[in-house]
Length: 89
Image 1 (cartoon, rainbow, N blue to C red):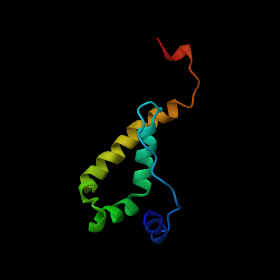
Image 2 (cartoon, rainbow, N blue to C red; image 1 turned 45 degrees about the horizontal axis):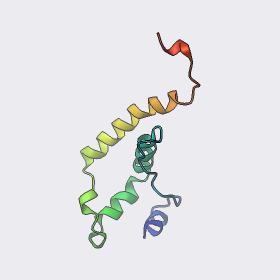
Image 3 (cartoon, helix red, strand yellow; image 1 turned 135 degrees about the vertical axis):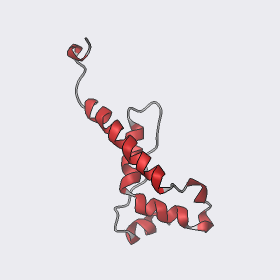
């Protein structure tokens, strides 16, 4: 049903990345995906037969997710640079 929902909304087929505590910045990856695929996620949680209504986000919660993604993006960008002693004073 997920892939059908994605095709209905003209989104490429992808699975949501998991938030893994031992993987650097996986929360950012998950939020980036969720915001990009928000329309499909909202469509899936709105279908009563799937019992996903409890996971449905309110518009204010989506706003918070977008703000958190912006904050975590900085850390994601910083992780692209190799460690350097000049960062530590």
